[in-house]
Length: 276
Length: 313
Image 1: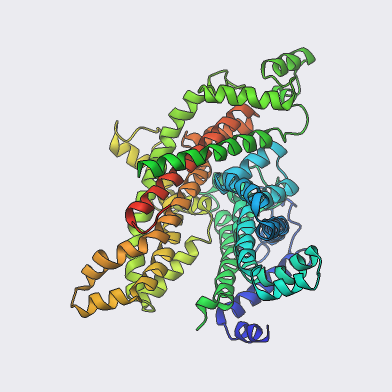
Image 2 (image 1 turned 30 degrees about the vertical axis):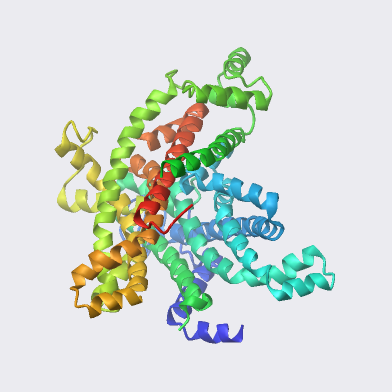
């Protein structure tokens, strides 16, 4: 692990991305302090204004401060991204562990169910779940979380299949370790590397899916600010206030890019085939 | 080959069965009484009861499922609660529009990205390669609706150009269809291109490192011949795999892009269904797209065996 720390600190991309990510997280946490205005307050005399000292990113059609709304939107994106991936990781790893370890009919059953999930385009499945459950933050998290479970199941199962044949697992079994101990204490720590890489990339995907759902009006509900919802609203005022589209796009681009680059860098660091 | 396709079609049966169960379950997650929700707040208890009866909602779940499945097997997707029209004909006519959009998008996305990806791999670490990689990374980090909105913004604000409103078929009026579909197709295509460029580059880097390429070079072949005659076929499998996954992305992304550009395809049909709480429409359309996606994946598996005869099942 120390050599991982060393290589991480000497990988420019990983380091820069972590710093930016930390910054984004701090912005999200301290949004109420940093925001110059309340995100839903309407300044009637300042509708559709461009950047100024008072409103650094300008205002929207209701005279709400865009900078503050984008800042609060960061919270929504990060919370949805991380919480939904947490759901996928927990359920996906559990299913992958038992499928890979026990094999036979259990493996067949779990993986066939996952195949069914894979038969749906991601956004469509999320859309169907949200359509049934109704829009809102919690349902959005749930929908995206469910949709991503199969990816993690597949990754964990694949790793478990090769790990469970190793001698140390056999020796753990021969000294009479309980199955739960073998699964979670012996095998699981060794699948965390691919899991981490996939989780980082999945967060960026989850943020994109959330923004797409919100764009369609099925994700985060107004007046709560979300980047997708902001872009959707801004379309009608495209010619009067193009900044209403551009700023949320930039915010989203930076956040998603950071998670993608971090995922790529982690893969280079953790995957033995990519090591120099 | 025929035997293989037959076998694969057989293995599809449980998957399709599973898909139908999943779609059925999702739609039945609707909290409360779907009939009451569909009819809205002004509905009388009698009308709710009548709708429950015509939709079979008063029967046990498994009976509902099997009668739905039985009807599906006879090509009956039910009728729309909102318009009363049979659903399957609407799905097919709207899918034809979505199909044109996705094919156009795939042509734009893949035809640009594969040559660029190859060139990027041949000139690895050159300024060209670095620029390509930056653009590819940006491309996978922006959602399609943002790209589409920005395209619309730039074209309308700075060039005063708007896509025509009326959607026509490619074989009826190719020029107008081109104008209608170019922006949404480019929107989807850009995202596709980013992924394929990355995959093509890494696949080629790996292939070009191998011994048979060195041999081909030693024999004095031109770069073009090495790329087209030797490397391309050996790099196709990962590119094709990603391409197959992207078809799913295209079918899903169409929902968003059709909404953005007001194209009355299958995606918009689903969204209208969701907004009108027309659950039979949502159920039927989602099922239809999943079936198309499964068949596309089967097709890709068949293409694998043609491209690489070493792949045996």
